[in-house]
Length: 633
Image (tube, rainbow, N blue to C red; front, side, top):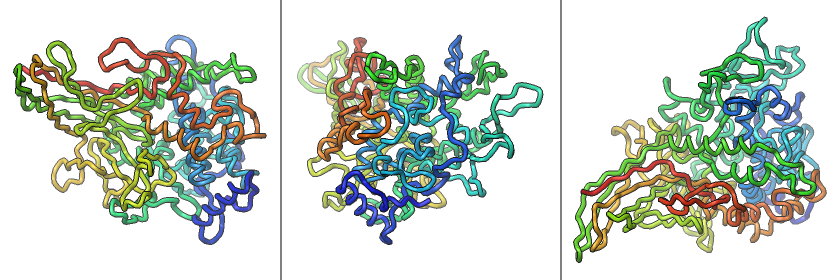
């Protein structure tokens, strides 16, 4: 259904003029633009039910039940807290500033209940009263600290996922990417009074059956269901792609710009082949607990219960949500908090456990010249990093996300004599020296600064992260998964998936399959007088958000005069808010969480080898993935 934004009244004439200008650029015919025209639209016959209503049967508190019951394990995940994520809200404001109304595109995935309920930018009959406010999340029901009953802050909820269908109501095919999902909105079996709740199980008459309508669904054990949201392109508007991918020389491919490609990375790897591993195998591993059940009174599911952990590498934001929204009883006027202290803590540990399986590191020495009392020595080392995951490493939302190799060389007494890619925990600065290897994707805006290239910094030399405006890739040296083929039938040159800025060789000439490892050579000078043997330790670290990204979000809020959240959403439901950003802009709030946290749990060592740990949210503390050490003779 087209979203006739140009017909709407806006809160401020300047904002309306800005939007009309952008809309005119996107749709030369003069019509306004719908950022989300595909898939099921708002105005459901059967509304999405609150996740809280599922907890009565599908949560667990006794014994090991909290480690396998679906609702309990889900509730600590970023899926469950996608609408509480302060990093998301800060980025949303930048997107709305870059292209007014673009937040509709983001909120479709992050708050299905709000979006399908008509509380973002459009309803079943047209736009909301103020689509710009809607795209900023101002019409959502509930609060950041309210429980999941009638709250749009419940994230990607149970009822949403378990109503997903592989085809549309008229047999339309599955839509991979951008949240263009098909929701089952018909009565189960034609007379069930509600849609089927779809899942992997079937039940027999006379045995245990759920107290709600159900249907067995092969789609829910297929990775394609994850591809709905975990491939993200530029908004595929009613006027076509907002941005198309440009190559290093400025050539426009005409292809929708790829923001994230986690599902496609998996699809083009050996993991998607017969005998491989699905997304669910890693991110929803089956419980082997002898007492495993999916619900109260349900049959044993030992070895056949996908645990709803949904973890990736994010250990930072769950800690923030735990500290900010679990218990707000001391704040007058608050909802009291979401609880979930244990659930969020488990999510952090599960994410660390998964990170520890993501890669192997191997350190070898190819040459060594021992220093003398007056003459320096040298070491030639090689570090091999092998990707053990089913997608690029790292993967997902690329802005601020990175992984790097830290190399330390110490003498016989343990004194540090050389370091590459030093990370300062106090400032959050990663020192990128000539030999450092930082794995990341840097997307940018072609010729933004008149350079005739893919620009990833502003006129002051600061890194920029305008994901809704990006149209080129300056760097993508992330390590491919095993069996990775960048070329596809629809993209024979592999423009969407290929590495940029680092050549990964083919496993054999002409195979089109890239190796799933990187080898980094280091030339290490040893100071004269240093005593061996020397240890050469390579550590692989992962970080959710860099200092540069958090500072960018803050700077955008300040320099572009993005208002405080309560001012932005003035007069709307549950305003003024008393938790979260409140009167601060979301970018400034995110920066405060990053830079001035209250005391909390251990997150990152004060130094790489310290046993004394810092406390608090810790500037998006890096997490160790793997380490290997080699010794000289």
